Image (spheres, chains in turn green, purple):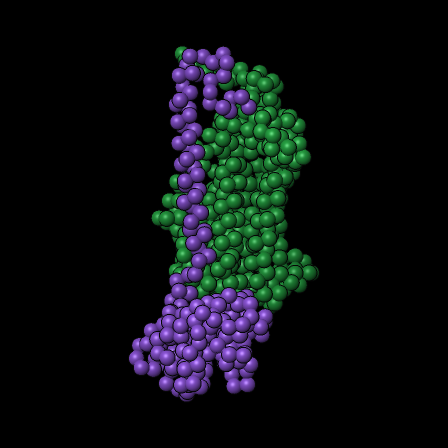
Length: 408
Length: 188
């Protein structure tokens, strides 16, 4: 590690024993970053900041929330009505979850487009997928906590997915519930998991950053850093770029917090949980909708659950499915088209997920699900037969070329 | 990081030197705005764990004194703490009034501590470390001065709730209260 240069003797004394200043300098200040990162590279840092906001608001909400079936609903209403700024904390937290998923989805699609999952970043990608899975579990259990009708029936439907497991399924569901239906023991343990998982998630993010800082960021050209001329120090160039992006993001986030706090929510969740009545139209939170559509596309209980699980787990083997050595889709004419169809298809699946599973919706859902998986499983062939475009020589040269065109 | 400092490095171009104050301005204004923003954003979090509206709404307690006979004491709950209400006898009032102020640790006359001499209303929390002194019930130890005795560390309070002996530094606190009529009070 390169030692920090300073004349402050106290800082030097500390740094010699615990090199936190050298470490921060190496990873946040002089950290070498490709010169050509676009705004698509903002979403990682935004996601990190949203995670911190979620943890902090969550801790303060937990100080007033009561994880008991009898009072959970009232305790959330009390937070919103009586606790000082409780409405703000609650809106920051509930909308923060949606924002977190928007940001992370963009972050994942960024990785897909620019081939950020390819060697030597496979583990970085896989840790990322694990973070995404942990996020989904955390979000699901968080949505159960207000104990409204959608919370209750969402919890019932999602936990019942496990009953599809042959032989032991029913026992597993009872084990998850701690009873014979979603009830007081369930909300109690979900609260514990909802508090614990983000801590694990945070540690996963640290490992994600660790892996990132070994081979550094990928870049829009998808070519390796070859010389110091290809790089810039992280600070001030990317700190300011990240801050600018964060500012724009916060405007959007705060718009929802202050002006449309229930935009992402379901009105039915303001009806207290009632185990005797299911609301007429059950939908999961929007960020689960594409997978919900896959689940419903398969006319078999176990098959649907397997398809839905595979839809997420396939991301783990993506680095080995994609055999092309070219990272950026900019230089992969066929992959680029497949990618954009995949993005459109994923959005379409999300739209289908909130429609009733019948008639034309069901047929479209099946076709859409088919493409979702076809995309992944033709990648080995695409890698073989696609003729990539000529890659640029270096990041520096490409950046310089752009600057020259601008001057002209 | 030499380019971290905003003084133009050796060999800087004229343009860089000219831009230096502009960069200083941007850096200082961004930092100021950032810190102010984060500082202001902290307030809702800090304030959220202050007493909430429903807690504040329950912050006063009404008591009807009619049923309390002379010599009798009742304990009511106010803001989660016991409040001692004692209907004092003539002797107790006289005794409390006769004490030489200079002998007291926390110098207060009995008149300063009551609105009506027959009613002593004090927060029943020992000013030492927060235990509840005994002396409200018939068989309780009342200490050497006929008031209250704290079992935790042996503080003795007199019939005016003043500290007379033991480690407590202050007299029993007198809560804010008002008589709404002859025999009713609102504490808080």
